[in-house]
Length: 441
Ligand code: ADP
Image (cartoon, rainbow, N blue to C red; front, side):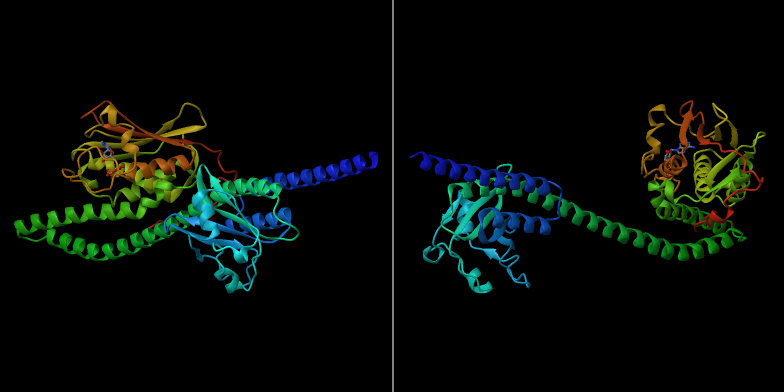
């Protein structure tokens, strides 16, 4: 009697030990499944664990395709190397279909006599399903698929098998949903970068194709401006004016990418402010309507050194100068100067005009992408409203700041650039000459 009790106790202990081992496996697998695996290795892992815990021959994962309203084979351990089953839809009156519809666990002890058994799969892969246990995989109250285990090696499926498979299916559902989301995100990202590439290529080709005929138009219009007939002169001026507006729009299109200027893409060199201003002066000679204003570019008395991407910083300053010219009546003064900042680690460059000024409400908005104060229908100045956003992106990539100041409408505007100063190069020459970027067309 005592012996019997000891035996029963030992059986119970080994039963409990088995349960603990299985639970440990489930805990282990939950950690792995939560480690954001990709879908295919994830499904394989789920099935391997299912086969091991259930002590059976095979396992399959079927997923619900919401778009096609179909249940299909996502993975199976019974597959040969061709993986021909993957993606095959499964009818809704099959066992898996019933599990999906009813959200109930289904146990089949003799598949060959069960009318719901979908034997086409067995035929396709030369496999014999004898017994089957299937559970729904549910995530946030939504059935995302079915997990099936096939052919229990000894005996019939037990209460514990059902319980463990349910636990595994619940974990699998969360992990599969996560992996599918990541996959969708990756796909969307790839599509986006494809579109981005297309857009960049389009801009590059279109701007090139537009510039060539525009050059011809501008050439002839300039030539006709010198014509003796006054009407011809005036018509030619109008053509030239429009052509210049078009040129500004094309330039903006080409420069659009600098709205996302990265610090790592800058070609930095140490320059004196006066060197930058000399280049700005040269550049300014080719600006539209430059001869209609008085432009003063004044080099500082205390010349500071800055570490800048020459091409990009000239782009910022010509943007500001172009705007000052565009928004100031001819004959007025436009002033570019540099001065000390709040500390000796900062220098401030100011581009000041006596133009239309800026409403205090607009003073920050003008730095937003595609923002223009005036309605584009009444604008006579070309541009896409991105010059200032590009300027801000470039200045910030340099570790600096840019802002606008104005006493209000009609009272002129000043754009201030604050840039960090750097120590003078020890050999007195500008450093990093090799990295100097070639000006972009
Ligand atoms: P856009 O090239 O279309 O002018 P920007 O980004 O350079 O685009 O400028 C945005 C808007 O900021 C302009 O449309 C204009 O309304 C305003 N703005 C820019 N510079 C000045 C300025 N110097 N004086 C008055 N308004 C200005």
